[in-house]
Amino acid sequence: MKSKTFKPPIRTLMGPGPSDVSQRVLNAMAKNTIGHLDPSFVSMMDDTKNLLRYAFKTKNELTFAVSAPGSAGMECCFVNLVEPGDKVIICQNGYFGDRMKENVERCGGIAVIVNDDWGTKIDIAKAEKALKENPDACILAFVHAETSTGVKSDPKELVDLAHKHDCLTICDTVTGLAGIPLKVDEWNIDAVYSGTQKCLSAAPGLSPITFNKACEEKIKNRKEKVQSWFLDLNLIMSYWDGDGARAYHHTAPINNLYGLHEALVILAEEGLENSWERHYKNHTILRDGLAKIGIDFLVKEEDRLPQLNTIVIPDGVNDVNARKKLLKDFNLEIGAGLGTLAGKVWRIGLMGESSNEKNINHCIESIKSII
Ligand SMILES: *Cc1c(COP(=O)(O)O)cnc(C)c1O
Image 1: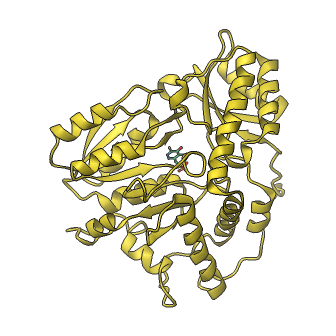
Image 2 (image 1 turned 180 degrees about the vertical axis):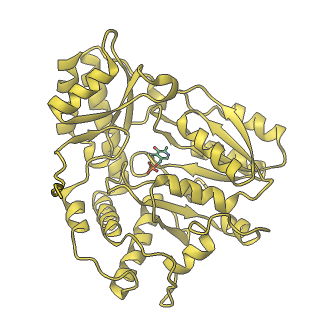
Image 3 (image 1 turned 30 degrees about the horizontal axis):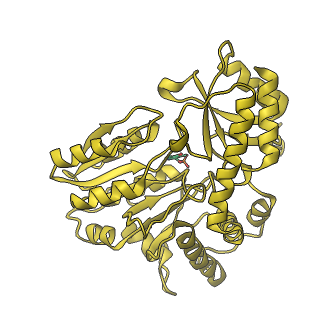
């Protein structure tokens, strides 16, 4: 055997995720593994649920972390809430709306797509038109923070509208959580999922998720079993919620959960609102620095995500070669454009730990030297 211990290079992660993971979180994950039914582990899981409620600004009982990345959180919402024949309206303004459609159809549901141009926010008037034209729809799904384009949409507006038309709402805030304001209870969002490796800066592999009472009702009244055994909330909750009688469902990713717990403790120490503020302030520093070297943003100012900055690649710069050089010479990872934006834009993440002035300066200096 020639294989040796893997030593990852030191990088600065300023792409669409994962973001830099702090030494504190790495140290937490390196702690000794204990049993997943150990009372001490169980109490850490309970504390994690409380910390997630803090991050989501919710009192929802059904709040926990799915043992798989953000895509599984997405799937968990759809498989539990969508039954065969259910009509779901999907507001699509980027890559992730496509995946929602795929999820709905695999659940036997009917997806109605409301398209907005990539790089623009979800148009509330178009969503309203679709709701009026489809009175039998029962769910409206949308992405709060579209990582593929760097656009934020307005959950409150969309949720108010959906509820007027008797629809539940599914909100993807994988990139939103801890980076921009999100108020699950105040805005009455029904089902919400996120990820750990974006603005929470924990390692990838878990998906924080929360459901309100209306979702619990819909799930309880399902006519058919949830298609996915692993993501069936009825089963998962007997594990996360056991109250001493915790039933074995699967073995939790124990050390990864230590990391998420520590990342959430760090968030609580900083303060959620302060985290939102820091992400915004650092976006303005990056924006002003890039303006000085003649770089334009794709998205108009008021719709921009501070944690995901989509910039136009300057004329004459080769996308792939430039990003290779950034990685090789500067240990800097930034994101490529997706779909129709491939080769036209770069995506600079300022998420969680990565959202700091040292990274911003490093990023601006590195880009300056390759354009
Ligand atoms: C990253 C991301 C996901 C998927 O999360 P994974 O952890 O990569 O599975 C889903 N939605 C959005 C908006 C994302 O940015």
